[in-house]
Image 1 (tube, rainbow, N blue to C red):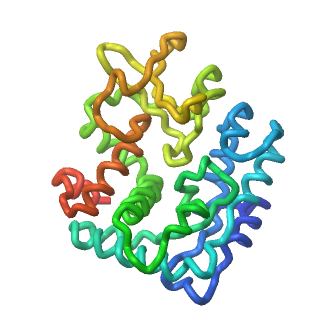
Image 2 (cartoon, rainbow, N blue to C red; image 1 turned 30 degrees about the vertical axis):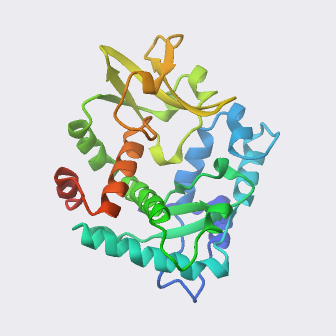
Length: 282
């Protein structure tokens, strides 16, 4: 699909320009970043801007420029370490019977200044790693870091095949109900929600204990918390962990549940048979 190159894309292409020393191993971003990036930023409430980066602005255009300024190239002295991690990740995919996933390029960028609360995440086909996270990377493979990189790579794969993943989720996670688009998230929730780019603008409703809920990841005085709002009765709010016990990790979206679960299985070389069969069909 041909996507019009906007000024945002031009800026991003400059940030992630090709470097001949590593382009054969770590693919640089393509021009299709802007569509996902722009939709993501458009869906962030201005009331959450200060949680996404250090800012006092409520102007969307200013926020976009500030956000872009916090995304940088991977430093030269870290690139060969990421090449090593990427090659190791590919070996783990192969060992788990998921060699087909290697064909999907792995792209990296660095975030600075507490962008997205210093969490690894993805934008379109790019894995964004915080500067502090990169400082931990060296020639020795750390399995916790490897699992995080596989987790983020799975988010890239989900984005490419989200419709197929959604169909799989319906059969795999019994508590899923229907999907609504992020644009339809009620304002009372959106103004508190830490919009997650890895959810790809789908909001899954959860059917639990005979009621339908909208899960929401929110910033509180005690850090990030996951809540569940009763659908169309938004005054009824509870901690998500009180009504679902599926995982000890993020539970607000099946993309996260899947990425946490499967990255752990790949590192342990203990992939679930149904998951392996599904991933080999995409």
